[in-house]
Length: 122
Image (cartoon, rainbow, N blue to C red; front, side):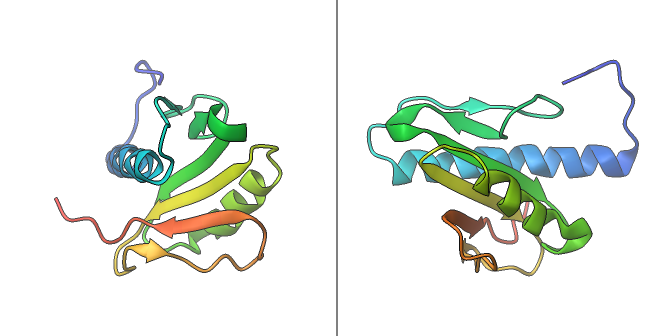
């Protein structure tokens, strides 16, 4: 993260919820993959997948928060991005209002597991 780069209020709120979504996604991965001991969270502007691990052939996940999964084609773009990665386990996690927590339809039918983190309330 670049602490010297100013963010406007909306960017700060979105980034905060994306960090929250990353932590929630990490929790799901630890629960889903027994034996998983560590992951890398690439928060903010770090390169690479948002969540990564070398465990069991590799884990790659993209994470976002938005007002809608289709906003700016974010969900589609992230599914395509993760789908190109060589890792064995591929995920997209997202946090959006009015979307129930659980498995979400992957419109591309590729091996990317898409999961809604629900409508998180603080």
